[in-house]
Image (cartoon, rainbow, N blue to C red):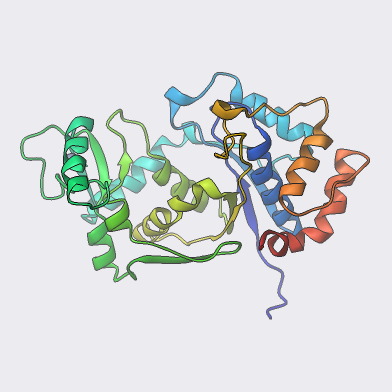
Length: 302
Ligand SMILES: [Zn+2]
């Protein structure tokens, strides 16, 4: 074992599409405890690139909720809405290598192509219509040429990674997703590109986030390789399920956290992580969980 201190930089990166609920607090608490257990830094990033889905005031509201729970970013909060130039630079970089191309397909054209694919019992992926040129159509979105990135960089295929909780993972991005979008037809930056550029810019070494985001990991690893960026370690936390057994969301009864009793909210989140409930103040509870949160990973493995 290497006894040198681990350089650890973790993050919690909510989208301000609403306030924190019980499910999102699990990811926030897990990422904070993992950072503290490693003597590392914990950063907050507001993922507000999808502006039509952002709710006015939600970002400030969820930062206030985090603060009430004793979870405060160690560095100034990074707002993705300020990061346009960095994302454009990354896209230009990919285009210059021949790894990104413009796509002129309308939503309907892609759906029609997917219908034909479904009839052949293949996955509903972007069919690669514009990979070899726009054929006179105007450019709408920009996509990553997955096959060329894998071939040019001689990457293993399917994409493999190790999740600290879920173990060995793999995804065949080409077959299961296809050439995914980097910049959307509406001009907004795609989640995958923004996350990869910002994780690298913030020097993130460990990503701890909800399991609903696990299937983005292979796409992000491909983009990291394409942009020459390091791949962080990943841990995906258990989801809190709603009454219908689906992931907790506003649609199935997720309530915004009650700021009048942040300890109760933290205790509920800690329970999902396999930690005991604590009495006292929020600060005391966080302090008590931190020495044992080295074992958060163990507790999470059923
Ligand atoms: Zn297209």
